[in-house]
Image (tube, rainbow, N blue to C red; front, side, top):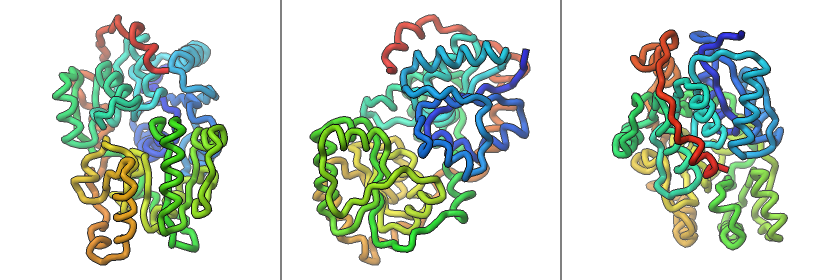
Amino acid sequence: MVDVDILVVFGVRPEIIKMSRLFPLLDKNFKIYTIYTGQHFDNNMKNNLFSQMDIRWPNNQLDITSSNVETMVEKINECIKLNNLNFKCVLAVGSSNSAVAGVTIADNFHKPFVHIGAGVRSFDYGIEDRNNKFIDKLSTVCIAPTEIAKRNLENEGVKASVYVTGALIYEVVDYYKPQAILPDDGDFVLLTMHKQSNVDDKLKLSRIMREVGKIAFNVIYPIHPRAADNLKNFGINVPVNISIIDPVPYFEMLGFMKKCKAVVTDSSTMQCECALLGIPCFTLRDSTDHPETIIAGQNFLVGQNFNLLDGYLRILEEDGFKARFCGFNMYGKDVGQKIVDVLNNDRDLKLFDIKIKHRTYLCLILNKFE
């Protein structure tokens, strides 16, 4: 029997990035075992991050080329049995299907679950919102990044212990930004787009590409594999001002963000990174799960209103507009240490005295997360 304190389940690029500065603290304070599901299985989406950011390699990589939760749960179960693991609790960050698999494993084994990034809501009823609500409902400890996220949990009647620690992405950006690899030319707009609501809809994806192709800047687009497949399968032409490249390691992405004129994105994590770096961010969504970036004046929702996007981009060079993007820390400091303190001190989550109630309805709703 291999005894560990915390079983960490993760499986997508943003989770690797967010956990990069927390893993050393977890290793210092607990015995952990990490499982990478392989939800993001493209090497450009994962391996270059572990190597470049000097992140501990997972104890086990499942190499699942699927986002199906039931498949993940099955493979994680096999991993636990094969390695004879005896864990005290499960931890995951974010809203991916890998995180859903993590909370499912915790429930199946009657163990506590810790959710980092709890309470984050965009209220768009998309897959991430549904996943987040599901995970928070089954969590023992909810670690929220902001007071707004905490209020969301309270409004939903979540029964878990709730703590506000700030967001891990602050420590990631602060630690790695001196190592950013800057491109030679900064006269471009950075585009990132991967949300199902944008890239899985042929008409919407075609319109986005056409309208972004009209802006008066060159555009660099490090493309998500699913978006690349859809561009090809839908037969969508790429405008001449858009340069599509493979996903890049984190230091290169930081360099693109620091040097570009602006970021046009549908990424939740990138909205936070831009706010922290002081980069104008225009979000291709009608709502955001990080309203703190808008309150701070660092992020603008444009959705499908491309006239609005064009107007913002045209005034980028005006001093009064540029001056507002100064970089803003909405999350405080020592986020990772605050999380460690929660794990050590929460009265319901004592790693030496575990009590948790089994939830029998889990199997009835699992099939919603495929």
